Image 1 (tube, rainbow, N blue to C red):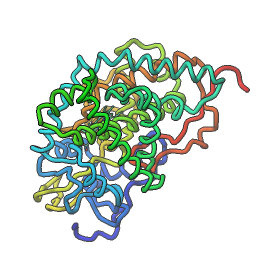
Image 2: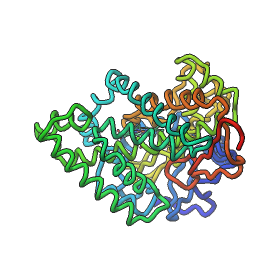
Image 3: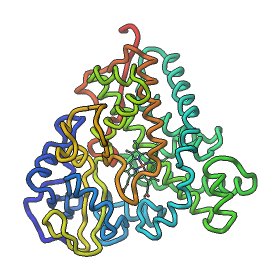
Image 4: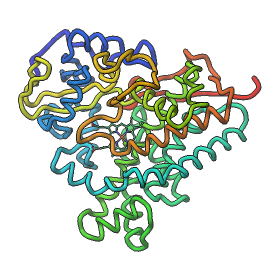
Length: 406
Ligand code: HEM
């Protein structure tokens, strides 16, 4: 492993402003753009904070995404185990990664994902109806963001309506990092066995949904096993559900604190709303613990030598505020040209679900702001519990109110 560096700062660092990366990350980006940091298990991966360096690492095959390799900066003790039990292509390198990813890229084409927009709009309106009917307050995370994203994934995959609750309960257990690891383990097992059985049913009775089409095109032809399709379902659930839900909830909180931007989201045309969504992705970068990689050869990055077997954390949140790439990086600017942020990653692992995430965000923010013109926080701002110690940043809950004060 890396040569010992006693003064390496602990990572992740605490935030000052809940909407911005820790100030220490900004300092490193300016003074020590490739710096060793100390993570939860005492290891010393390299934290890379400049935009160009982050993109260079994420597009360089000399950095591996395989958590099974020695030196990979795992985010928890269970991560290696989880990968072994349920290997998915987000944690594989090419050519294996490309072979798996290719099997489903067609499902994420612009044409296919645009066809999902009315479904997302319907789900959003139904949730807002339920919120409105229940009175003048709600938890925006539990009552809107999470059910919206999990129902979208269910409809995308082709999970039958009667299993939505089962699926949502188990996916919550799976994503609750603070919860009992044994419970999370059981949730993976139960979801896998549910999905494997569902795939068998789709093999017997074809359905026109993502899993159904994969079954027809890949399982029937012998390219994928039923178990592999089940693992793919879990990958899409894990990668797509919590990220989007937190981006929605934290984004709404940001908008409530910044009414001038909320006005753009509420009253803007499609182009302005889309541009504001991109800026919220860039500014908030909820995948705040960086893209994790391990060097498979010695590589020099911005003057620092990263040796084979050493871990690297490519910090998307720091890169997205790099003034070398973005003028006035801390401002939300819907007229920003060439907004090539890295909130969805970069290189071969760049987010496959980004067209769907965009549809969800472009729907969710305007819909809630238009429905409740006086949407406001129901608790003081300093009572909000942020997810600083979770894999995906955001808020644990977001009490909101509308209508007359009670
Ligand atoms: C705001 C929402 C989202 C954010 C911020 C986000 C972010 C990311 C990032 C940063 C990566 C790169 C991982 C790496 O380099 O190691 C990634 C990969 C991935 N995402 Fe997303 N994502 C979001 C929504 C979604 C959705 C909705 C889906 C699916 C429906 C999805 C599916 C995936 C998949 C399958 C990968 C792995 C791609 C690969 O390894 O080739 N994501 N995402």
